[in-house]
Amino acid sequence: MSIYQPAEDSYLLSEILKREIPPLLQENIGLTFLEIGSGSGIHLETAYNLWIKKENIFSCDLDPASVSHCNSLGFNCIKSDLFKAFTGRFDMIVFNPPYLPEDIREPEDYKIATTGGKKGGEVVNRFLKAAKEHLNPNGKIFLLTSSLTKGIDFNGYNKEFLCNEKLFYEELFVWKLT
Image 1 (tube, rainbow, N blue to C red):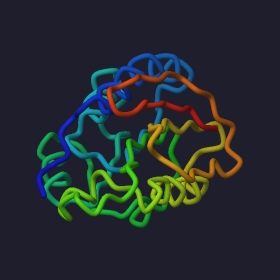
Image 2 (cartoon, helix red, strand yellow; image 1 turned 180 degrees about the vertical axis):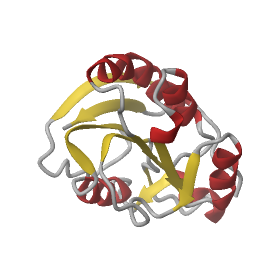
Image 3 (tube, rainbow, N blue to C red; image 1 turned 90 degrees about the vertical axis):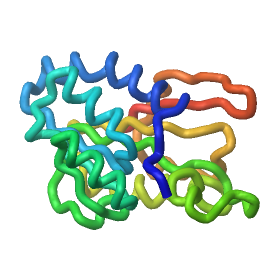
């Protein structure tokens, strides 16, 4: 498997982070940032370029090549399935999940980065359930979903729709959850 490269979903989420991080930093200069599924590190770089302290930026990925790549960029990245390797709490958690429904035609080595389960929402649901234990009381989650993703249970979070982008075959959505 190769590192998940930024595409429309990554760029959309990055643009939202550029808008949302500065006011959060004004409230909390020591903001702690966690990205689940760091891939190429685009959101880690966005956070750092917006002045989140590098020592407050954490990330993980299932793909050892992504972990190695993000570490080579100077970020703290570990191999983990969602939050399994984390014990702390964070002010901001970012997730651009694998969100597509299972497609038997898709190569197995791509599924880890793209397929969120039979309906597409299973990985997101696991994330949302576990995130409650890792989000600070006033923390925020930034989550990307797709019109193709079915079966998401927002698990009691307050959700705020931030933006969408229509593509040829789907519509992407970014949510802020508290």
